[in-house]
Image 1 (cartoon, helix red, strand yellow):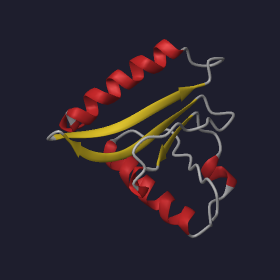
Image 2 (tube, rainbow, N blue to C red; image 1 turned 180 degrees about the horizontal axis):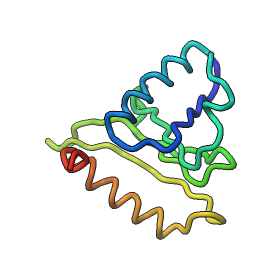
Image 3 (cartoon, rainbow, N blue to C red; image 1 turned 120 degrees about the vertical axis):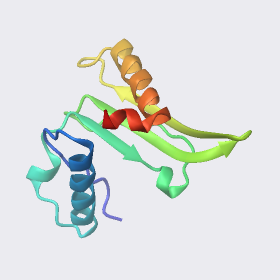
Length: 118
């Protein structure tokens, strides 16, 4: 195993650009060719173990980042599509209430992804 690769995407503007950059950085990470400039400077990490079938987990913040979002697998339960996400915040930087507000906004976007296009 190669451990954690936390790619830094900088100040991206649109969903399409984020998707393209994420794909490119993931390919670079899988090849073990990330440079320090590509994984430093961020303040928010997304850890997705859902693609490995993990239903729910708690991710640990990678200092000096302020928050990390743990994304679990999408699944059907009782006829509904569900996905677990957990946010961890360094309370020296981000108040927990602000993290909760961020999760509320995230939930709205996940439930209505076309609103990201507007």
